[in-house]
Length: 278
Ligand SMILES: Nc1ncnc2c1ncn2[C@@H]1O[C@H](COP(=O)(O)OP(=O)(O)OP(=O)(O)O)[C@@H](O)[C@H]1O
Ligand SMILES: [Mg+2]
Image (cartoon, rainbow, N blue to C red):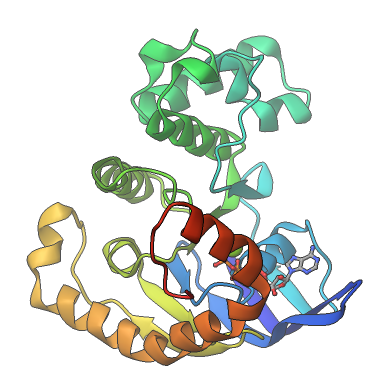
């Protein structure tokens, strides 16, 4: 399934006035592509994913899913925080999509088992979310997204809250799953290394209001794993993205300073720590 975004603009009206989150985004994600979106904080990445998922409405322009629908649903989303239901077991958290579609209980159990095997969490089927580590919870969230059987998986910084080593592991897991059952994946990340490791192409966005500044193709051969980082193309690609991003990241930091001052400065001073805006 291709995802075509055309002339997408999003404005939010708030008490303080109008915020232009997206100012005319155009992009086209190919069928079964692993596509990355990277950009400075506040440039509208989450807003863009929310519009793709139908959670927000565009002010102008829109998102089109083009192609034959081969699966049960159109999109699944994985959030930064796994957002599991704490009162349900792992096994009961996975088949939300099939449950929503009112599929049979035995079918839901099979689906759950299949995807928990895939993310290597079958042994934790009967556990509750509070018994899992952060990385394990994110794996359940990924299993839940896959169990929904979507054409397109949208991921909003899915590994951002995890430690560096768990991140590495989950990237490899995600690659393994994607190689096996290629779906169109759109991944928002702040992490340059992660974007190059996982993606076929990466859209680099400008500082707010967001537009797509450039699309970078990643030439690192697949299948990829930890060792791919040694490939000279890996470094070259990261460098290229950083050169495109650098100015806008700096701009976003400078522009966010006034709104963050009071609380952040208080916290910073209280701890005797030094942050960039002090
Ligand atoms: N529901 C909302 N109401 C008002 N303004 C919003 C809303 N959601 C987002 N915004 C504003 O839209 C802009 C883009 O926000 P968004 O969360 O999409 O950025 P982002 O690129 O995902 O940032 P980050 O990298 O920090 O996650 C910001 O200025 C934000 O304050
Ligand atoms: Mg965001």
